Image 1 (cartoon, one colour):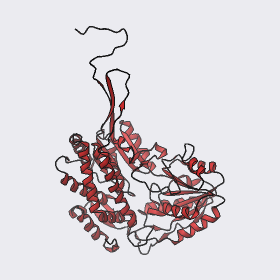
Image 2: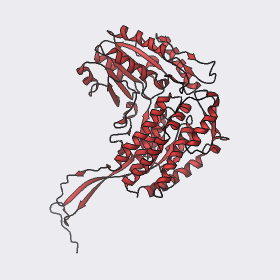
Image 3: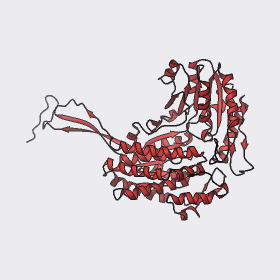
Length: 512
């Protein structure tokens, strides 16, 4: 399928895409929520926003659905997720292109995000037969003790614009097989991809049959106030929220106040260390993709490069040259590596950070706006490398834009201290050919992030391993491994099969 689009026809092409996936075109106009494409900066649809009363009613419908869904055997629940995966396969090109249009991702990344959805569906189908509990040794003769896992209830999912569909699927696929219903509040910057996913889910649900109750997936469209309704509702025992650390600081305490459970996947001021023994060709490729991909708008984007003084002069000029050679443009154009920032606010934030870096003694390469004549309402930028005298000022803060701060180090201990010396950190990596350095970096005295890689960049996550561990909040875990436990509640059961009731020594009473 060709992914070339006419940027002047974005609204029309978007409606055609959504229609093919099952969204009624009548729902794409005359609403109060403007859906804009960062490709052009123009509005491509306007959809209905939900009110607080709508949200309350939809959470109630999800709770009713949960009460029925939890009775369906887990392997049968897995069949619904399998059917969802089939719908995603059938509409991968359309949904991937819609991600590019609405989030500004280049074509390969839009398609890759949908592939992650397919992968987590496959994972969850197998998981539906592996929701294991332990048999526990008991001190009481004639008894058996075990743990069992039960569905938690309604799971609230709050997702961000930069991964508009994959993050939902990481949560929802597991929640569905665990027996939960899902209420999804997508970013107000990416409402259309959520509408498409909802339509595909309804197709899978129709094929599945009556065992899947109405209300199993609810999608709340709107701004922050609708998210607050979801966060505060006591009928939602689990809230999984992805976004900035600022957002996490607001969500976490509110959920905790009502004794709910939070899964927080927040932004990361991620670093990579380049050691003296590093393969510089490998490092160069890994650094460039991790720092510039998605225009620096990933939670795992590389934002700090900690380079040994012995290889600094060999690596950094090559990296600056590579930055200057990348193609910047519409994400659906062939060869584009760097698409647009999501909006003007993101651009303004980037420029403020670069000015602060200059004031702190930094040397800035790149960072300027480009393509302004062609796209006056969109915000394309030249990715920036900033050589800093030390790790200070804006280097300590995450800026959701393609800025890579570079500092020198002289010892591995110093490099690890620099790597760990920021509050927000989700992912990390080291480029080295020294086994000892690699082992130290991944040990308890090494990186303090939830992801620690060797000879690959910090960006990207694979379904088999749980994604998470943002250190500032205590982290959360989505996708693979044992992340499913966050969507369930655990009980310990003791069964007396002996007919005898052991009592404390010397204790007797008459039961006649």
